[in-house]
Length: 254
Image (tube, rainbow, N blue to C red; front, side, top):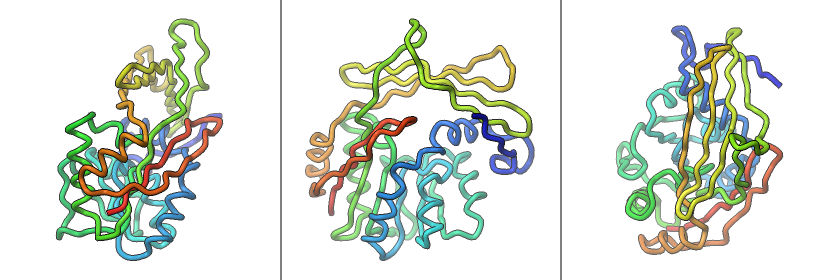
């Protein structure tokens, strides 16, 4: 199925920003985790929610539409610009910063911090992740909760060697077709490599995008959290869907 979109959601000055299109196409349709974030938001009703790795606002905008103030943090200013445009009059504040060294305006501390999808697996093993957890701890109120998702159910494949691959993700914006095709998932000893081929229109040019996720399980992340003063609680699980891998959500309390 091809979804028809318009460039106004990506760049009001003209052609859409490719980074926004690819982010929306590859991440924006995921919905399986939203009930959990809403549940946690209801359980922590005071103050803002900090959404780390917010991108174009898949989770942040959903929580804001349910009446919450959200601080959306990401390192990519283009994605955050799209989020601000979409937020309109919703109570969303954006912060452009590295998750391993961020500081919130006015030294604000929150009762709930979330890191959806695989954000915590993109920060670098060891020192990078520890720096991130220290920043999270510093920005949580006493008794505040940090909840972060870890991908758990990725099935390796390589369609470049004749293996089966998922159906491509496609959308049409102002008549131009954008296609993203996952071509390889390879699990190594310390990382998981995810490769995609991206194409705009009928161009012969194919962009290769490679993401490497740190391999880490919930128990290891809980130990790393404990080392910076965060206390593990019962983890949650988000099941696999037809289009997306499942994830474990680690819960760490200040």
